[in-house]
Figure (tube, rainbow, N blue to C red):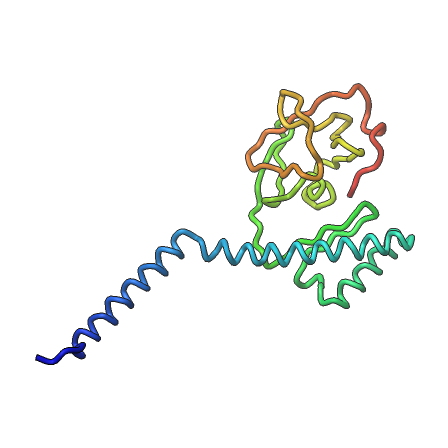
Length: 192
């Protein structure tokens, strides 16, 4: 009897390995691990663009550009680096800049403030929302609070203050308003 692997055993082994490999690929795609890895790469790239755009905005702002001049100067420098409005949603104000990748299909979410429904993009912070077109409430901002019609926006009826730069708007959350005893004119201009 000859020692070694016959051709039939080799073919059967290869077929079994292909079936196992296909099963692993299917199971990984069903758990979304590949999609999550792709999304992580896109978010990392988006964060790098956001950081660069914020640096450009700060440089131009420090050079005392304002209004349309600030917008033009920032857009020119971003476009020179290949960051264009074709690929990115860019919002520039005297208060700051936001850059969102159009390719990353952010899910639109809903939330309420004092019973009124609003929309935002998933992952949006309050500051992002304030300077976006989603701010249909004409909300304004001070150094540490958001106001709508002279009332301060709170997390809940427990009067929890929002942390503007870090609090992400949560889908389905019901935020409240707390009277401040004044009018919205006391709280300065809006961020958007």
